[in-house]
Image (tube, rainbow, N blue to C red):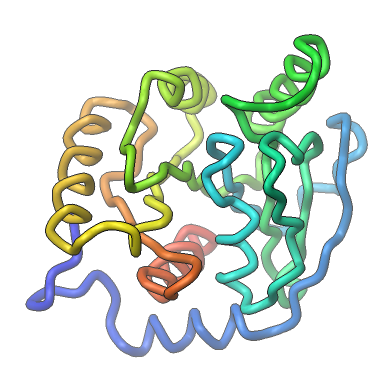
Length: 217
């Protein structure tokens, strides 16, 4: 379930092909506040979800090698739309509204989180959701609702640990194993966890390859 030096998940050819794809132009397409504002489901989409301060924008920017494609902010809960980016006119990367610490009224918070849930249920071209979890903290109770919503929507989702550079390698291995165990019985959970660092680049080649593979299925 996890990558080892003896048995890598992806060979060099797959890693290089994914690198080339993600080096191609990526542009902001639109931000939608309602489902009927979304584009036609004519391209495969992968979505990124997670707590408001987990580093979704930073990860998207790191994957495509652009510092300012997705807007990163020190203000938790800034993403209140479904933001879509197009990679090489082949794949859409979707930034979903965060959860947990949104600085908005309860009504507004409910509205944009409900938009995220509606997106999960209503996009037939959604190939996978990448649920971002801070490696320093692992899965928390606040993440349970997101996991339940993903299972209910029957959307394949994969856990991505962020900020792994803040931990020692043995600690990363430990939280990875704990996370795999925690999601083992969840029906829609993909049985691999990718530990990443947007700052250092760790895990990004593997995540790019995971995304390409997901879009082909």
